[in-house]
Amino acid sequence: MSQMDYNEIRNSQPGVVGQALQLAGRVFSPPEQLDCGEIGMVSGQAVIEAGRRYDELTGGNCHPQLAALVFDATGDFRALDFYFPIVNSLKADPAAREDFYNAVRYIAGHPGLDLRIYAENRQDVTAQTPPAVRHIVAGHLSEVFFYRRDIVERLLSQPRHFRIYTNREAFNQDGGLAGGDYNFGMEAIQLEMSRLFEGFSGKTPGVAPFLHELGHMLDHFEAGTGRMGQCEGVLPGMTGRDGPVFTPQARQYFIAGKQLEQQRYLAFQHGQARPNDPVPVGHPYVFQTDGEFIAGFLEMFFRNPNYFAAQNPQLYQAFAELLRQDPRRYWPEDFNLYITENRKAYLGGERPHPQNISIPRY
Ligand SMILES: [Zn+2]
Image (cartoon, rainbow, N blue to C red; front, side, top):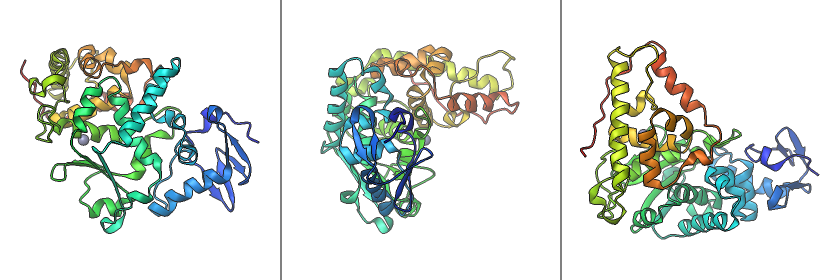
């Protein structure tokens, strides 16, 4: 029997030693039961088998956390809570929490969610893929749009393409770029499966490659026509052409907040910043293009909201108004890496590269 607190170990990545399950420094024999908190007891064997499916599918390239394996073994949506910090704010209200799971279930089953898993040589292995993969993708969409069902409904009104790859080779063979991308020609997010799980091995969620690429996809999405179009550096609902989902206040705040970021950046770029001047919230990386700017800030809104809001309240408010949520409620403490790394980029003494972002007109 386990004396471990499930919430303390659900982020760990189980391994297999001989016939036994190795988890957070302990070894479990297959018949042993793991106490998974409110989810109940799950056998070591069930966790081993769930993990084996990923090994076989990806050739050992993807090692999901215990939380995902418990979901695959039980189908219990509470197992996925760890992946979606929004659930922290819903736990006091069982109906709201259930509503979130229903949103995940709904999006996962939506015909507009065209999610395909590819192995090498573009072999489609979607049918063999464990359910956590689909539900984590659906969960991210549910989290971002939990309070804007109108936008996600519009997004899924036509098939949206998500291509997840079993390993690097499969990703490269299908034209994947860098660590993941939004492919303009395919109108698809391309990401290795292991990256869906990448930021989830700490006590709280960290780097979020899927959220970043989702930011790019949303930037290309035209809510007004329902089609995918050019990158404009805004999210659906931020332009007047977006029809009923247009949220004018979000646009106003976005323009003001982006302007402030740009001014701060220019001060560092030109070496005019004084010692105590505020640094931009975003890393120089996001000042390369309007597309990187919106993708990077979407990610930071869901990972370091406290710092983001304190440094640039108007830009934060743009996201809060648009998505009608305030992630500070789910994040008592930010994911710190995005703060320390970004600050270091400005305070290290080197001038950042010339910025290349533009400010939308009022
Ligand atoms: Zn990007």
